[in-house]
Image (cartoon, rainbow, N blue to C red; front, side, top):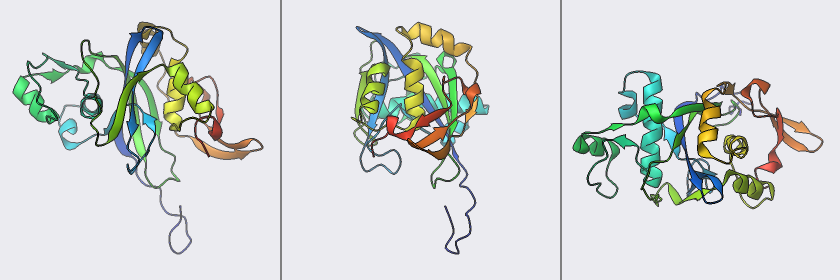
Length: 241
């Protein structure tokens, strides 16, 4: 990224964001909730991602940065795919109801303690749009049906991590790098509780991918301490050309 004079531009400050990876045990094993972003989105257009987004002013009103991140993750999951993690559960939810209004009307609070910190990724400094994203894992709320908001996302579905990884590696869909690596980590588990138990002792190491060229194509380097099992990943494994 350079200025009009040709000098390198200062890196864009990443926006604080949170993403919630909801888990459940399906008939064939572990499943995760994923949403497909609209093709007109300004970021990650057309890609399958976990529900998530930037921390807004209402989220930041909760005491402490960690609480704000957890609330943002829960709010985004509600807004994008309709899955609600609050207590007590409202007796009635109006379609497309504002999250803050829902909490106030129902006298409920986000179940922040159910979220397990999982990963921390920051978009590389050379890109024009950057996010400082904290990922959380949680068991999906019971007896709720996911539904895409048809605004930011066009579909919401329970998918097996192994199947999504395989589809990306077969060039059948595009993933964000962080999404791909988090799915690969989850793909080692058959049950949701096993993933959550392991995640509770997983080190949270900040990952800022470093792009580089290799004889096989463009790669991204990440820290070994991040515990993803590899430190250099070919871009064509998760993104179609």
